[in-house]
Image (cartoon, rainbow, N blue to C red; front, top):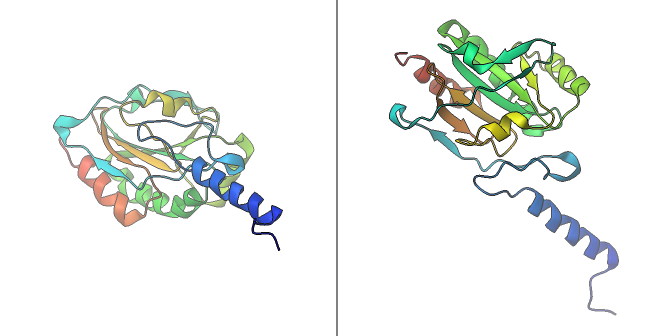
Length: 196
C-alpha cells in the first residue's frame, strides 16, 4: 500500500489551496481578476468610519446606469450617497440585498441616495438581480471595475463593499463585507444628520 495520497486526493488538495489563495488580496489592492470561476473575493470584514476631519474627497465617478440613464457623483453633492459594489454571482450580495433596500427606503427622506455599482457581471444578469430582489435604487453597470479603481483613498477591494459619501463629497465610511440593515442604517443616519 502506497503512503502517497491518491490522485483524486492530491487534486482536491491543490484545488483547495488555489481557492484559499484566490480569496486573499492585499489591504490596499483592487484585485479585478481574482476569485476564480465564481469571481468572488471574500471581504476582510473591515469597517472604517472616518471622523469629519479625516475624510478625503471621493473622485467624481460617473457612468451609465442599468436603465440606460447616467450618473455623476458631483451632481449628487448635498446628498449622502451610499455606493454598494455588487455582482449577481456573489452570494453575500444576495444576502444583503433586502437589508440595503430597507435602509434605502428608511433614509431617502433624509437626503440619502443609494447607488449600486455592478461589477464583473453581464447586463442581463444584473437587471434580473434587481427585479428578483426588488431593488428600487439605480446601479451603474461597471463590468470592468473602473469605478473601484478610481477610489484609491478607500478601495472597495472585495465584493460586496459599501462606501458612504457625505454631503460634501467626502468618503465617510467603508465596509468591506456584506451588511445587515441594523449595522448600516445607524451609520448612514449619523452621516445624514451632519451639518452640510
